[in-house]
Amino acid sequence: MVSGGYSNIEVEPELVVGNGSADLVLTRREGGKDEHLIVIEVKSGLKELSAYDNKAREQVKAYANNLNADYCAVTNGHFVGLFSRTGKDFGYYHFELSEDCVKRFLDDLFKIIAGEKEKLSLPVAPSREEIGKSANNLAKAVREVLEGLDEQRGFRLETEVKKETRMFYLSVGKFRRVFRLGIPLTISLENRPGVDIRLNTLKRRLDLVTIQKLINELSEIPGFEWAKGTDIKKEFIWRHLTPIKEVNAEKLKKGLTDWLLKLSTLADIE
Image 1 (cartoon, one colour):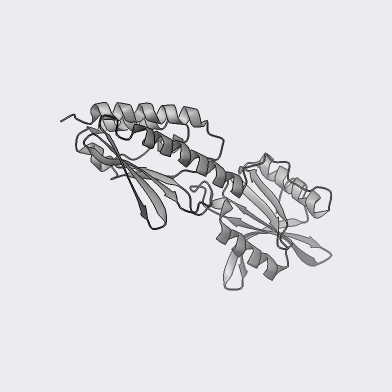
Image 2: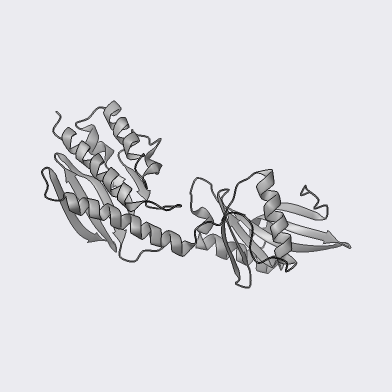
């Protein structure tokens, strides 16, 4: 039973629907009848943009159609997207699994159902389009850094188109193709730019303590916070360029340039 004054509302987890099961269904029970209000799909919180997944939206919409529920939501515990099965989109919001946030979500949801509100009062999260644009801007800033270093002492940039993605390979001294940037020819939320750093290339000349320090310093650059806590025992680290907040392009370019210049001073260590 949902707490906080919703005595006639029940949460049904893993409700069987056809050949599948809906993660969460909020059901209102009045006069001996059940009315399914909203179907919620819960995605992994380890993937920061899983709440934006198109397949999850289609899946939860199918469950809502089957259950005759008017509203759908997809959340990963960090973001929540709310929409109706008829196509109305209420947007994306920052979300957390706390009693206060859940109560706020429910209060707003019932007001939307009653026609008293148009949106949730939770902090607004970036839309799919805004994330795609930010990712494009982030990739552009990284590309400008790589192109700016090309042919400087110890730097060499190679490019090729591979599987509908333009690849940029930066060699730093004897660290061959140690930094890689991939920019899809058509960028979308599902097809985003990405970078990887070849740790196995660094390990041929640097000790693990030095590599860990380098990666920690990389994580302090705007847009590269994800590098913090990286397992440097891996052969490489890879990540989509997925800014969930605005990144200062000039700070990124300066930070990444300085980081790569520092790497170049280590490139000839035997």
